[in-house]
Structure formats: structure tokens, C-alpha cells
Length: 452
Image (cartoon, rainbow, N blue to C red; front, side, top):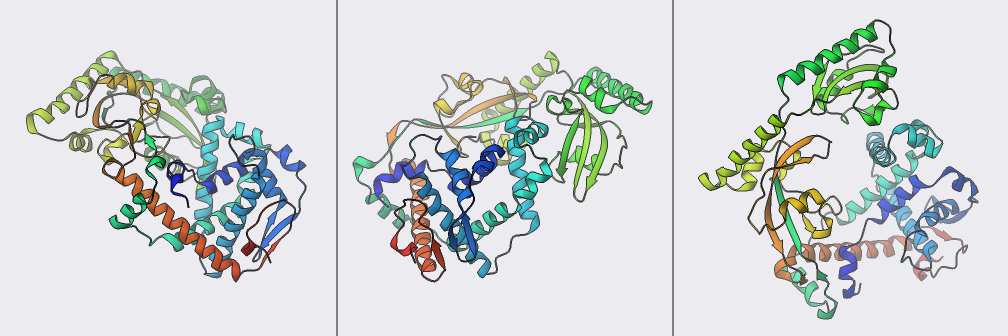
């Protein structure tokens, strides 16, 4: 691996993940136009022309791809099949739950992107159950490949000496320039619901429940009154979901309902619900609901801001750190990591300025390291109105990569390079002892060790 590829490695995305996203996004019409045929066999696993063509149809839309995209796909698939083949030989197992969890997560992701379960079914021209059935084998093989890769690389590590050696091999002119980075934390408080508003919502839901008991259609009332814009278009129908996906307060009530049974009114962080069971299958269930979201009064918002002010003042009075305050007092999930705000694009805790949401960048404008903002209103990830204080943990100015400021990133790249090297060596060894038959359907420069 060339050392000038450090910047590229730092920005790599998981190829396997892309492959399986593309499997999902291919349209039925395109798939029907693909001519089937075996391109290669690895052990007892075939690589079909359709697999390559499906991925090609998507990857060719991405800029800066190599000229031989199909060859890149073929090489990736050979490695994937090799991993899964040897995973089976090594008796590595993948449970049905693992496969179903992976499929459900991917389906939930696409539903969030497309807008609803119904729209997803229309897009693929298949029911959710048909989509799940079709991707059982794909995700089972993916999980096998991942388990084999983890078995090969899980015990690898790099010492500080390894990191130093890796860094010293990089030509100084090839070191990337890192843009200014900022690390942020937050302390979040949700305004309380006024008693009058709570009573109004409960009264309205009780009236709707009575109307349903008197014979009116739940779905029709949900489409008229539910504040859940995603499900109200489908009469409040949430589609089949597995246990553990929905918030506990909702799920514990919903899962105990019998077919067509109505729940009592329940409260979750999203508001107040009335639930009706449609049907169940194993650990999955399908319910419809009516959600009413309470209005938050200006007084409640002001009270939340006052509470935040009193909490952050503890840093001055008792010399308590911001992360300790966040762990103790913050009311959202960020408290679990000391209030640290995570970059959704990268999964890390650092941001460059153009990655910040406007609600954040406008709040911290002019602040310096170890300073915090005034309490501001924002909309949380789950759609609720909330108040927060944002703290500037650290600011790293634009600079050329160096061990002092970027040790963690360079260590990560050094470890990744070691994993790639070990995986390549494993691949060469296994290809010599594995049946490989590659049809020359593509004009690819396949390495000699891949040829029979």
C-alpha cells in the first residue's frame, strides 16, 4: 500500500455495505433486463452475471470510478465468496435472528428514506415479506463473510512503535491537510407538559376511543386526527415490527393486545397514543395507532431554559465538568457519552464547520474552546421540541497531519493497513487451496493467483 493513500484511506467507506445497499436499490425492471449466467465459482459458491450487472448499474452513476468497474466488482465478490466459503468450512454459524435483524435494519433505513412502508413496497413492487424472503441468502452470506473477516483480524493491534513506523514511512509531501475541527457536547432538557394541555389531549383521545367502540373506523379517525404524519396516511398502520424496535412504553402495551383490541391511553416521549392490534406473527406484530402530540407552552420553554442555566452554573460554583453535568442532568441519549454530539456523517465526535447543522453553527458562533452557549430551542432527532446548552470541548485549527494532534486517526489507519495486509495474505493462501473457476466474460486483469 502506498503511503500517499493515507488521505484516501481516511475517507474510505465500507465497500461491503455499499454492495448490499445497491442490492436493495436496484429496480425490478432493471433486474429483469439482466441476462443470467455464471461468471465465476469460488469453492461451492457461484458469482452470477446478474450480481455484477446489478451493482454496475448503480456504481456507474458515481463519479470518479475506475474504468473497469465490473472488474472491481468481480474482485470484491470473489473475496466475499472466499470469506463466506471458508466461514462455512470453519463451522462459523449465522443464526436466523442475526440475518433477520440485519434485514430489518436495512428495511427500516429505506423506509426512513422513502417515507413509509407502503411507498417502499410500491417502489420495489413487492411486499415487505417478499423483500425479506429474497434477501435472506444475501444477508446470510454477508454475515458469514463478516464473521470470517472478524476471525482473521479481531486480535490484531498496533503498538505506538508501529504507529510511529507507519507515520515515518509517509512522505511528508503526501500528508493530508486536515480542515479545522471542532468537538462539541450538549446538555438537553425537554420542556414539561402543562396540566391543562395533558388533560385536553387525554380527553380528546378518550372521545376518539369511545367513537371507535361505537363502531367508527379506527383507520379513518387516525387519518383525520393522528399527529404521526408517517403512519396517518396509512390509517395509523405501522406495519409489522419486531420486538425491541419501538419505545418500551408503547411496545409493552401493544404486544399484549389481542386482535382488534384497543389499548388504554398511553404516554411516551412522543406524546399520547391509542393503539389497536391488527395481527401478529411470532415475535413480530402489526398495530395501528393514533398519536396526539401536546403543545408546549412558552412558559414551559422558559422554565426549561431557567433549569439549564441553573445546571451549567454548577460548573462555576462546584467545579463540576460539563460532561459530568450532562451524564447527571441531560434528558436525551447523548448523556450516555457525557453529552458528546456525534457527527452523523462520519460517526465520530469531530466536525468540520460545513458539517454542522445550522441550528448548531448559529448557536456556537463566536464561542471559543471551553465556552458554552446560552440555552436555545431546537428540534431533537425524534422530532420533539427541546432546549439545550452547547459546550465547546476542543477546537483544532487547520493543519497538516501529525502525531501530536492526529494520533488516534493515524493509529486507526495504521491498524486498517495491517488488517488489509493480513487479509490479503490470507486471501492468497486460501486461493491456492480453494477451487476457483473464473470465466473470462469481462476484460479484467485478474491476478495470476486468481487463475486456474
